[in-house]
Image (cartoon, rainbow, N blue to C red; front, side, top):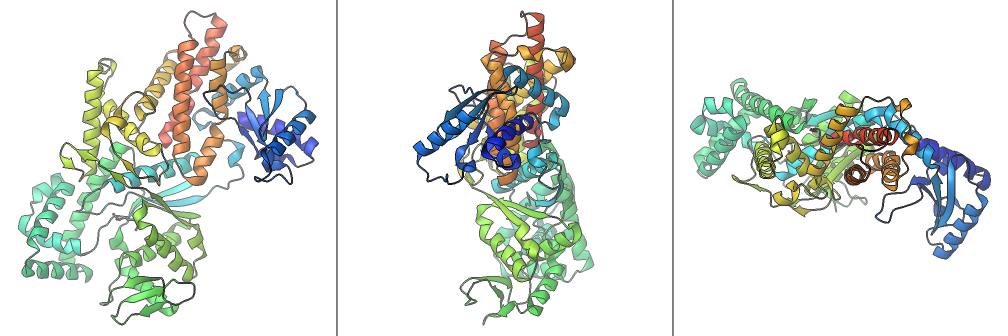
Length: 575
Ligand code: ARG
């Protein structure tokens, strides 16, 4: 990695002066982020992190003094052309010719794996992660929380794969519970086999709404209870009706997820763990963890002092299992089946307690791997409505995105040059939706706005897709030059340097997102890159310049496509 060779070189000089091993110093040297006040230095060393007795509460002027003293003891060499001291940092500027050569060579060599191959990741062992996301409930609404879970989970899985890890993507469907009792009875009364086949999700939802209205009368309630009891008793005919609902729903989900560029390795819903949950209750009992309340429900004491101040209910008084019991069974089963290094659950923050309890119980049961389970939670989104009204199906959101984007494109008359405007509108619109969601911290709640998401100017997904498409076509038209034949050292203009400096930071940004699983670092990086590329396009024309200069500029522009193509990590659909 380009940045890596520079960091190593700086660290080796520092190591002699500070008498510290270079490996310890590399972590404290980072590429300087782009700022509006154009920066001169490329890397900076944070003094507080390397000098003994310099802690964060050390006085600012002391830090500055230490930085000045250290800078004074360092010398420029063939790699570093300038060294200066800032408030608490020593700044390094790389020899300009070397910067252009090294960065572009590395992007050229690594292609779209640029950044992911950095030595920042070499200390991270290749791991296997089970990631559970999306997880809607059959016959119920696919709400915005499920949409967020889908795109966040997909991002985490894509990122891990891009960094060389193994990933199992699981969709834990809500496919069990009393709702199927009602649905079974509802289908006998209101169901239509044709509609079930042609649009299962919509039809099952309609039936569910109808039967819920009818369920006020005692007779319907009783019939629904009977149907569910038969399901629990594994009555063949009842099971086959349920299975048909489930299979057809999954088929339709697969098609819709495809539009989002999302796929799953497993659809294993709550139903699968229904029986296994009984085994879990038995295990809890054997381990002395299951306690009965006066009402007959089963609980696990989670309090530190064992005074029942925090408990989790794992069994109903009739002995049947609950949501958490099925999750316990699912976690144990997943670990047995996949022997993974980590398990990630992606849902909104309203389920945070549930997952904390789940992990605590697993720990009490003696599963050390409970520490490697993680709940990635996100905030709530308000106000997403489609023309059909409240969002009920994922398909509605996708159709709305597509039609709104198509309308925007038609009104700006850009559709003329596009081969398949409908498909393009869908991809661009989805990117817009996802970027608007990923710009902030995942935990933040926000008010949804179609107009804000789909606007083409400013920091939007439309802008990212547009930049990528533009670079991609530039590459296709002119991108056949060999790097060795191009004199990239003539890229000396400030706008070219800004792009190169920004490319230097990519591995650090990927690393950050891989650590805290927040997409916002990569998103803001890509948006800045797109702005810098747009400026460079304007100020550094390819046409009309001297051949050597124009070739170098073209090389710089076209190599950026390797980085923008990594937007695929964020939204699988890229144009
Ligand atoms: N189906 C659940 C819901 O819609 C989400 C499932 C979350 N995952 C889990 N393992 N409990 O709320």
